[in-house]
Length: 368
Ligand SMILES: C[S@@+](CC[C@H](N)C(=O)[O-])C[C@H]1O[C@@H](n2cnc3c(N)ncnc32)[C@H](O)[C@@H]1O
Image 1 (cartoon, rainbow, N blue to C red):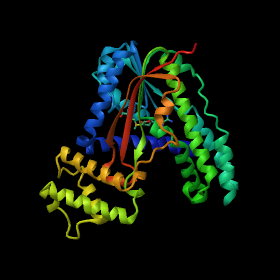
Image 2: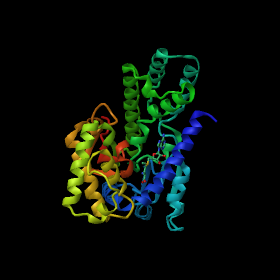
Image 3: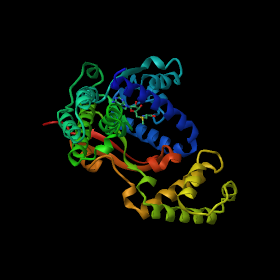
Image 4: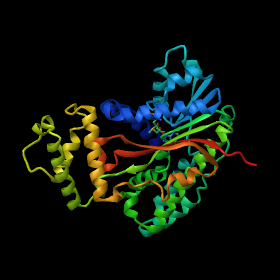
């Protein structure tokens, strides 16, 4: 099986995991889901279109899908993960389903397949330091220019919703190259730490972002765009030094006691209050029904805020520049950015489970 097909099946597995997480962390996700749905409906009021296209639709948790299909003539869900989109459509009342179409599409327009096709022979022959330089050349050769494709024509002038897909599109080059390196060389891309390689990866992520923005402009025409993105990730624990993790654990223990969450504290294994193990224990409480959803949110906010105070670097964006600068190009902002936190996978938040979300309502600036 080719590495690309493995990537597609991984994205489908991610879709299933995403659905399970949504159930497990329902209380913590509620604010994120409701805020996204409300903003998408507000955008529809400004869109003046009878159709909508949803990019990165997945199983539609963040979408007010039924309301969109009820109010519009047609809605097109777009994703590489077909199974999740079927789940979204099947959740609609049967009479509405014919107005909801599915498009299984790679939104990088084949860039990821090209990247893998070109990286595979390099990884098969090159060794050591040469690999990094050869991969830089491969990355630089992928222009990622937006190309109008036949399926897009029918949907021009739609209300366009880009629903949390950028945070998967932009790290794809890094993710696929890491996998390819692991499979061929037994090492991950991080082992190939090489300044020019990091630069080339980031430059391709920026080209993919521009490609996506060009797609949004092309599809929306004179209609509106909702852009929801969580590229401003908040990677917490793995960016803390051991001494900082110790302080975080101690402060978090104090805060828990001050809040008198005795039910939670009673479940704690004996041991000192503080340090990394305490933080890990406190995080593991989330999603187990020990604390009420509101308390879980308070606990997570507390830990993320404390971690950010201790180490501003815990909030790591995926891009080398801020998204607002890029959004400004070619669009006027109707509303936003709205910002909130999404506790996507709070139990694994030390690996990036807490995301900073930004959302805009935009309108393409028409070329003179
Ligand atoms: C975080 S999920 C989106 C959540 C969704 N909007 C919702 O309402 O629940 C990101 C989606 O992007 C899709 N995706 C990632 N890379 C893609 C690509 N190259 N082409 C198309 N879809 C892609 C994934 O399959 C996934 O369903």
